[in-house]
Structures are given as structure tokens and as C-alpha cells.
Length: 466
Image (cartoon, rainbow, N blue to C red; front, side, top):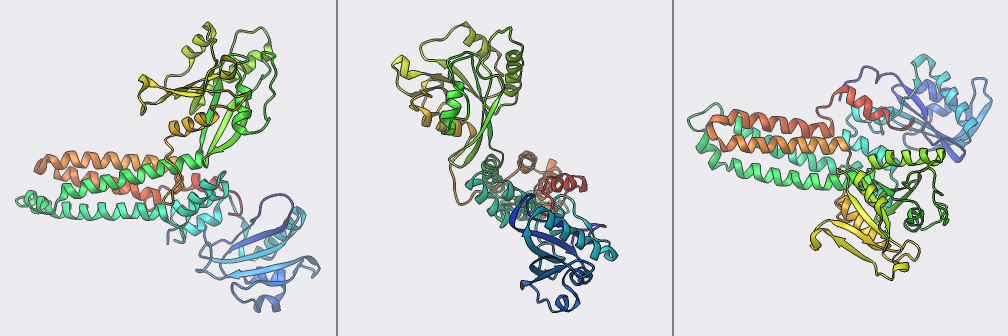
């Protein structure tokens, strides 16, 4: 069990979302929760509760009057979500009823020191009590926040331990190689022959290959979780709002022939092949004396600076100096696709242009018609290609930026380990040290070696009641 000085204090919270609903749940976790059960159910009903069996009846105020009627459940630790004793009171999901139930729980448990739970504190206790590792705990929040079916399925796989098992397998291989290398350090006259017979470099190469595979899958999982921000930029009346509507499949932006219709950004969340994508329509870029439009243009450049992908829209058959000026100002470190719109007016067909005309080269331009929809699927495919999406699979799991950083750091340590191993006897101690550092970075993912302040940041981003 991981230590936490506050874990002995019972916590309580409304575990269902804010607002009205058919059912609402108040959850309590701690030890020796009998006084709370007796306070809400009465002594006789509380003592008669069977673990993991729903009991229907009234929830009582201190004077015996009814707050509500519903289901009470008791999950004794360690066989519960948090690993502690857990009580759940499931009543009608009105906000007033839920607040009355929560207030009564706090009142009945005052002698136990029960307090309101902080964000993510139930899941944090599950982590501290070894019910979940850190990657699984994060998957709980990712499953709640999933914006696409693929993201939800990936989070479910992570919660079930698919990501953690991949990390543990890597750690076991690194530990085995560490044991081999460190054992030879005590026998310097035999270490080179021993490591060669044990195929130490071959083992290291296999670990690096396995790590590269996990990193590639984690990058796909991170894309499923975070998606990408795609900014539409260009001069007025090139069809940015029409393209937003075409990608969204709905009239979410106003389209008129009047230049400067869009004054502020319009964001629409869509999904392409299960990948969440935020399409951001912006004000047309030009010189203007209109103060409101000028503010909108300034915000456009702010969004451009934060984009994952920029679609620079131009009109088919009409490229002028303003288009060139805009292209020159776009950031060089962000993927840019030139979208040539209104091909229906120019008599062109939909197509993709690639750098140097090579089929495998990056997409440079997409010719389409936002009005007729011709070429929109080509653009969707180009966006997935730019994101590095390789398609949905049963082996995908959700991952976060911190996981990617840890995997990349572990890969760097393994690369250094190989360089030191190839120097043979002169650097075998450094070989062993790089293996140790790689193991630590991998263990950070599942929480075996994780700073307390990082735990605080991670769980503070959960919703209350989870």
C-alpha cells in the first residue's frame, strides 16, 4: 500500500454529474462507516445490510423525517473501488435532494471526521490502496472525458490494464538485463565474454524495438485523447466558413458574400475516423479600418500560433499578393496545407498535391469545393495523415503527454546504454546506470516512482466524486 497520511479520514461527495437526473448518488469512503449508515437508514436496517446487495428504503434526517427513498449499498474493503469501506446512497437526481443527502452524511459522520472529497480523491485512494496503478487511474478520467467512441474504447483498454501490462513487460526486460550487467561488474576479468555469451546487446536491441512499438501505440492513444486543433486561415471570402460547415456537416458558421462576415473565431468539434478534431474558423486576414474586424484578425493570428495544423485557404484560379503575404507570415514549425477552394467555379477536379510529386511525400495542397463537397474526403484523409493516425485497432490504449515524455526519455537512456555497451569494459558501469534510469522513467508511468506533487496535479484534474 502506498502511504498517505490523510487516507484514514472518511470522505464524501455527490458522485453523479451536476444538474437534474433520474438518479443521483452520494458516495462515502473510509473505515468503520457504521455511524453514517445508521444515521441515514436507522440502526436496524444498517445492521441488516448485506455487502454488495441493494437495500431499498427511506433516507432519514436526524429527527427521523424522510429526505428521500432510494437504494443503499455497502462495499466492504478491500473489495471496493477505493480499497476502503464504501457506502453509496442512490436517490432521485435532483440537486436539492442530493445536497440534503450529502449534508446528512456529513452530519451523521461528524464524529468520524468525514469531510467533502476533493477532485479525484476516490480514485486517488484506489491508487494509494493498490487497486489501480497510475496509468489506470488516469484512464478513469480519460474515459469520462472521451469525446469519441475510439477514445472511449482506448480509455477502457487502459483502465483494464493494457497500457500498464505493456509497460510492466518492458520493465521486466530491463530489470533482467540490469541484473545481468550489474552481476558482471563484480568480475571485470570475465565481464566481456560473459555479456557476449548472454547476448546482452541482442537483448538491449529487442527492448528498444519493443519500446518503440509501445511509444508508437502511445502516440496514437495521445491523439485519441487530445485530438488536434485545425485552424482555417486566409483572406476574406475564400470560403473558410463554408469549409467549416462542410467538415462539420451542419450550418455552424454564417456564410455570406460580404467580406469580413466572420469577426471572431468559431470552433466546432468533429471526429474523423474516431479522432477528435477541433476546427477553428477565423476572421479573414486583410488590412482594415474597422476596429472590431481588426480585433478579430489579431485573434486569428493568436489561434494560428497555437494550431496543430493550419489550412491556408485560397481561391482556385485566383492567387494574389495578399495570399503570398499571409503564407509568408504563417509559422514554419506548424504543418500547413494549402486548401484551394471553389474548384467548381474554376472547372477543376478535386485532387491532392504532394511535395516533389512523390506519392509518399507530405501533403502540400488539397483542391476541393466546400460548396459542393467535392474533395472534402481528401482533406479529411490529409488531416489524419498529418496527425500520424494509423487507423483504429484492438491494441490501442489512451495515453497522455507525460506518458510520451517518459517513454521518449526511456528510449534516450536505452540509446545511451547501447553506446556505452559498445565501448565494452571501459563503460559497462555507465551501461548499467543508463538501464537503471530507463527503468525509473518507465516506472513513472504506472506510479512506482512518482513525486507526490505530480500526483496532486494529476488527481486535481478529475471531477469531484470520482
